Image 1: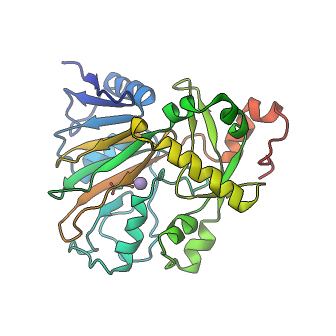
Image 2: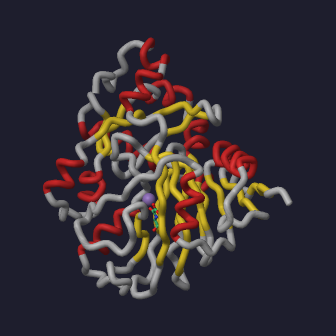
Length: 308
Ligand code: OGA
Ligand code: MN
């Protein structure tokens, strides 16, 4: 039977049923899934008890996977294609709330988009729920295409060509985490990302914001910071937000280029275990995308500066 795509009342979330992601997909099944992904940005699959291998196999349909380097510098529980969205230590025991890794993980409770601080940003993330707490621990998603559409025309013109600087050191410093070693800091220098981007696959334009964005290039820091905060507040108003309440064996796939997300608090003494795979954006870095973008090349020099 063909897969079914049902749209939740939130128009950027679709639920995909009649599919078993543990078995290999056909090209045509993936093509339906990918069209829905481009159209809706968030896909929810329920009742998918995946092994890590099965999650990897499904994730690879979307493109090349990112490796998840050891940013926090602690021993890891999962192999390096996975980001560990859990409160467990490398041995599978619940972390002490005072642990450095707990502090690092709390950064995921700020609105962000995965890997915006990397030169090659992420296309999508796939998060598989293995154990969930009784209360809390939801993940919220904000629709940054709808938010862009809803901006006043004048605001759109002001921000269309701006470029923000993103870095993981910045977002973690916002929660008071300064435990990076020098290799992490030098290995992940700040990167430029356009604040507004157009996506031919969906025909939509989106904001691209994140806790990792520190300021607007070419602007006074405080002025750029204020603009980013204002846009994040605007884009995360309730009408743009979907809250996913996890059940074990849910898999949620989201487009990092046109959504933001954040984890919600929960009782850290209860186990919450989700495994994430992350797919790289095929149109690699800002520089490569910029040279492919005729609009950027032919428009007058933006206030934010193009030579970044
Ligand atoms: C993620 C993420 C937050 C959470 O999976 O990338 O930021 O705790 N998750 O659900
Ligand atoms: Mn994340």
